Image (cartoon, rainbow, N blue to C red; front, top):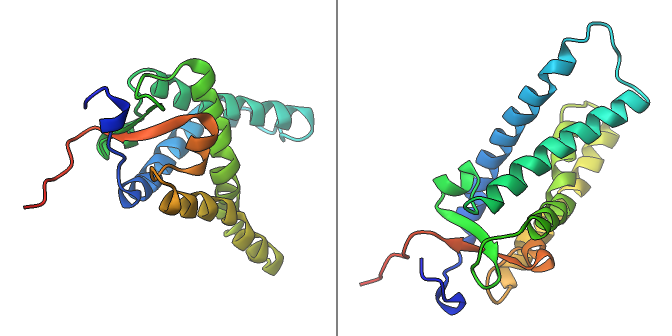
Length: 173
């Protein structure tokens, strides 16, 4: 891809949405593997402070995964598969602060939806109603991208980053 920020092409919204389930499966696998050592603690019910420490540990694992990949090549495995990367507004590589800021901002929009997916497994009617509301932040960022001048997600705008297509766009004949 060309390094001039004016010539960088944003991937389609459909391409980015298609990458979301793949990214979610990879993150789920990472979380399961990271949680495996705790599963060996027989009879240890995680509640109170140990539960908070465990949740913080899993948060750090997810943050390390995304920030490391975004800083080293700008792509997670899902982004490589769908051929786009994250970069600073000018197309340069992200530094740690920007990558971590993007992770936190994305968590504001996709985190509630992840919690909502968990609530789908509860038969309680209240849980189903709450689930509907948890998807609103994710829908908001998708709608934002639809109407944004550069088709960037809201969390990319907040973090000062952008998504860039890594293959040349098809030429219409």
